[in-house]
Structure formats: structure tokens, C-alpha cells
Image (cartoon, rainbow, N blue to C red; front, side):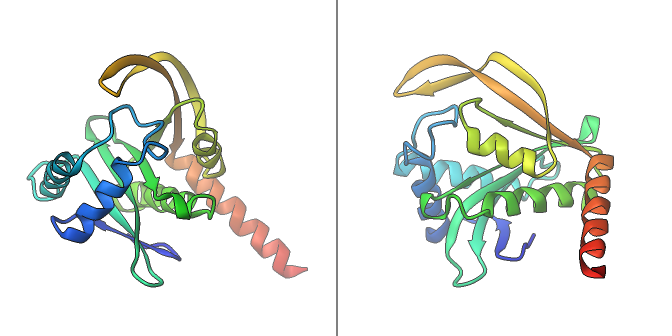
Length: 196
């Protein structure tokens, strides 16, 4: 998968991808709204092995991708598509290293994953989940055309520093027809802008 500035490719068991996983999953600020604890080196290695192997399973459902800057080839994050084929749906998500926060790259990734789910996988619904306090995340999903469908109270078990607690969660979704309409609206606005 490619965007204007990014390449999203399968994770592989390489030193480069291990360094990326460790940088993401060992940073408390990046992991603040992720429901599990920080990973150490051995845990990061095991996690990378698991997500890299998933790509080769016969009935794979979870596709984790390394996110690479086209300009320079720097690894900067991860993206994932989790298929729920029984209802023609996918859940998507992403994480970025802190130097690339606020540059519109998460939005670029999410739009690419939405388009991939609809145009290539022919799904009818794409969902995204986030913590209510993760304002940047839910605002970004809204900019991507996703709609808030639910505020789920104490819906996710968080494990932080070995301690468990329940946290609230927001559920967002976009349907195939929503995305088609959004694309047509943008095309019409561009044509109107260029026609003067």
C-alpha cells in the first residue's frame, strides 16, 4: 500500500523492523492509549515474530504493516487491518513515532487503509476504536469521514505497570457508500474550484 508520502508494507523479522517495534512499544507516551503494557526487547522480538508470521497463514485476519517514509526510507510507525470477514468489515489502526506527530501522516495512512478495504478487499464497513481522551485520534478519524457510533463505558481492560483497570472506548465507522459519497463531493469541489 502506498500514499503520497508513505509506504505501508508487511512487517518482516529484520533488525530494522525490530527496532521500529521496540521504539513504538517501549515509549510510554506513544503507548498511553494502547491497552497493554510496554514491551521490552524480548517481548518486542516475540511480537514481531507473531505479526510477521500472520502474513503467511492460510486464513490470516490481522495484517500489521511497517510504515516507511518514501523520502529517505525511514521507518516511522505501524498500521494494521484486522479483517472480520463474517460481516464484511475490518478494524483499522495506526501508531507513529513522536517526531512525525502532527504532520497529517496518520490521516494519510487511515485514508489509504479505508480505500484499500473498500476498493481492494470489497468490504462494506471499516471501524476504528480509540480512548475518549485521545482527542487527536478521534478528530483524525472524523476528518477521514468516519462517524462516531458509540461511547462504550469501561469497555477495554488496560494493563499498565502490571495493574489492570477498565477504560472507556469510542467506536467510529465508515461505510462503503459514505466513502464513495465523500470522494464524489471532493471531486465536485475540486472541479468547481478549478472552473473559477
